[in-house]
Length: 215
Length: 221
Image (cartoon, each protein chain N blue to C red):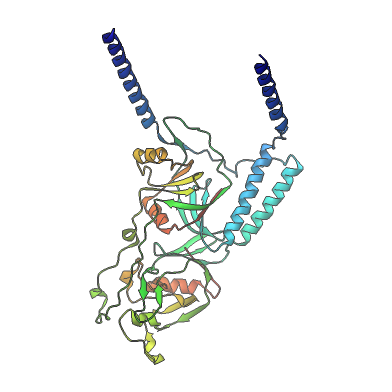
């Protein structure tokens, strides 16, 4: 009996301490101010990105356009003809609610699957005899022959966000989706469909540590 | 008694097996991604709400100032964009693309000097550059790698390095020996075959030369 009373007192004490340690309810931020604050933070990060001497991506949701940009200057545009929110689900379970994506900036993205570029070494050879255009030696490969783009690839930002790029309306298979989710490689994010030519060109242009601005 | 336990155990086993199979099937079938259309708010159509507090007004002022800073970096005049991975050159301005040209960018290949420690990687450099000088009828002063590549001795006489006509009618220099210039081999345009420079066809080179000045920005990605 004594033991039970002591146990009860301990429980009350722990509860009291727990309640005491909680901060009082913080004043909820006005949703309008929260949106403005997010827009401000995104602009600050975008200014940082634009100060670097390398390209980053800008996804304009209203214009349905993905652009390679440098210093705030658009370099090449890739029209988006399908834009979807993408949420991983395990056995029909998974939250449908996803954080807001407008006015967000993501950094240090990496491409999956990683483009494999081999550095080829030149073997010095004796100069070829004078040739004209008609008898030029064999043709070197085109960019798409050197590096074929997959039908679907993603830019992963630390497993917390992913931008999936599909070549055409479909791109990829359900089996690949399941494999990614079951092996813990899935991340929520957005899925965009580009034309196959644009998707291939984008894949070949992507390097390491990619930045992404979503407006 | 023993027979009853075995029958019951068998039933439990089969029910469990079927149940597990159904659960695994559901798990598998329901696993993947759910892709749903994204609702996009059209900022132009949505009226801007009156700032309801000092905090909101301060934030809006800050946002306007940041947008102004971002806009300062944008180009108003013509600029050149080179997509080196896809061998495309674009002449752009604030209104969009004025010219799309097929070019040849660096091959990315590696050449080692057999007699020493030097090596060269023939890549076109990424980043922001600008036209430093414009030249008509440029002359190529062949660097050491051009001789090494063809198993030729490096000449001591400067005159032996000079080649006429190889670079086409015009050249736009953008630093460190890199240029936009013409080519004798227009059939190779669209392929990564240069030693880092950008090669253009004759007609496109004329247009790009005419549209650019010293200081015209060049963006390479």
